[in-house]
Length: 409
Image 1 (tube, rainbow, N blue to C red):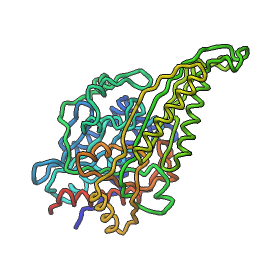
Image 2: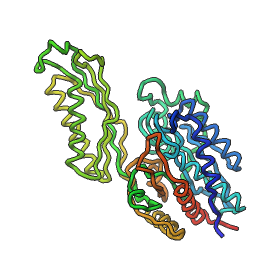
Image 3: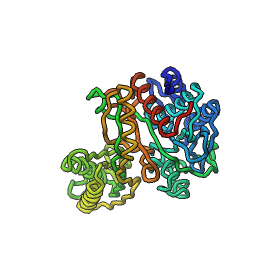
Image 4: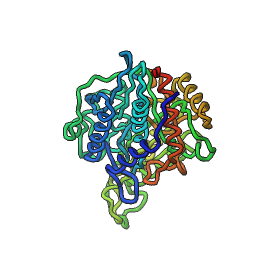
């Protein structure tokens, strides 16, 4: 008899964590390494300890708790993150960590010992909303990102440094990172596909590549009424042309290429003054690494041409570069089989968003489970997934964990 998920217990934790950093009208703001993030971490550590897990924290602030197995060795790890964007929902990231706690709670309630240890992990700064790049904690944990470089990273608004903030909130640890026997992550889809097709479970085949770039354009302030258009050095107009170019490149490449201008700032920001400086970010994504690289190169060429034509200077810097990642085919198949064994409809699908799982994929068998997102909303205070879908995803997760960890009566 397999252990069973308690939806009531899992949802209780979802709503309890959701009170930390809660926003008026719903959702949460737990930007990485803020006081709200610290409060969430404190709550998580207490939850892990209450479940009997042995808690460790590494130098980039990642937290994991281990439930021992009958044998020593690398654990089966369930992971995600509890940091959010500034207008986040209750489920993005947090559900993956809390479903890991529920897997442990269900194993404990069933009195089941596993052959392998089982670990639950929460990784630092997955979102990249306050510090770039995203997937910072998992990237350091798995050796993709350099620890010292990440500790020296300054916030996007220039106000703080990662290492100093870890010290301030008391979460710079010393534990050695571990490579698990396998890595699993349950996540809300953050898109509309599962809901639109009436499918309960997504067996995620991989994650598309991510290409973040910051552009800074410098021109010259001047009077908005007396300066002829042909004589202006208008940083704002150059920035607008870069934004339009990003949109056009995505349209011409076609799906699955996407482009997003997430930051667009003008200085001095006065109605009657030609802007002297503009700063914008462009987020390009594609499942094809070669097409993604070509899109990035083309955007840079068009940005440089626009700046030259306007008599402006252009600086650019990469904020994140992650190649597309494929997940372990055997593990994706196990998720698919586990869903069908529970009579749950299932679809193989790629992820359009980046996740901590992509950092583990080169080093151990890795896969993800998606559940439907209402109206496809995420990074939004109205983000929602139905309790039945959450419980179904967590049950598939538990079943796969039992298969991988070797459940014993």
